[in-house]
Length: 334
Ligand code: ADP
Image 1: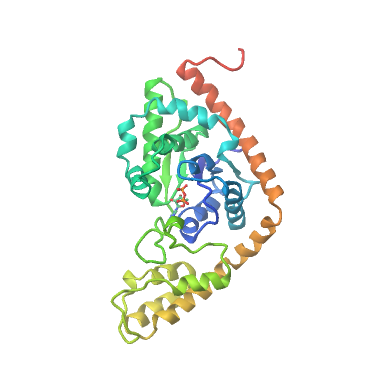
Image 2: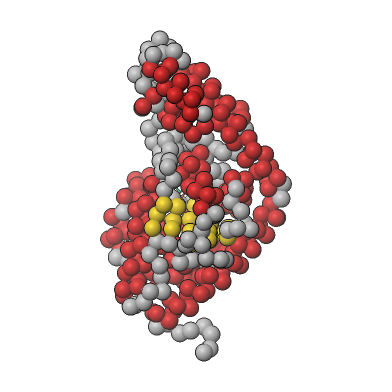
């Protein structure tokens, strides 16, 4: 890798097909940053284990995610794309970092409390340590920039503090403090118009959905609740259909919808039809490209293994310094 403006790392759990929240909140940034940074993108399958009750679909979901990423323009020739569990040093750094992490800080995190609320019967040790593993991911590759959606910001801050604690405790600068980076759309709402778009809330629209599925999802979208009848004027400022138009519809048309909705010149059904058509046109090239990758799962695994081999070299460089800083024995003589 040549050194550009800095090093980017980001990861996401292999939850299967990606949705437009992932796309606008993260993936589009992943693609763009490839021009100016050395980028490392990771499918964090070990993180997925914290909440899965079965791992039956884990490998398939890893592929599904890789296909969305590749189809969106993440390029294994310019970036390192790999699977977390393929680089074993991350578990070693996770253990070492866990010793500089106060437990109370982990259990106080809003993201942890949310997970406990969602699934009170599955509060495993790994779930509590999720942000430590994420810190290890970022620190292992000495990334200074972490592109994420706004929901992940507390975890990047946590990683920054963990690195700082480690460097202070061992009087070293072996690890680099990372900083988050948002897109212009750090939080996309779901089709319910209220919550963050999320697969687990079933309020998402998948990038790889068919045109028909996409249209059906858009037609289910909740609009301005005060607009009960076609003749009622609407308020685009609080309507998620309108928010999404800004991503998919040409600005002149967005301006027109903005006016027409307020004076009931356009109804929600027509407004959604336009959105669905534009969304389908926007994602058509991505969907076509994805089909090529889908036909070659072995090629995808080879690409991910190749990425892991390149990532392992960077990881081992860091771990040599980390082991030395901690006072653990060196693996190599000399
Ligand atoms: P993870 O839990 O591994 O972060 P997610 O699938 O929830 O996996 O998210 C992957 C990336 O997409 C993260 O950077 C996250 O912040 C971003 N993201 C997820 N949902 C949204 C959303 N609705 N709006 C904006 N960004 C999102």
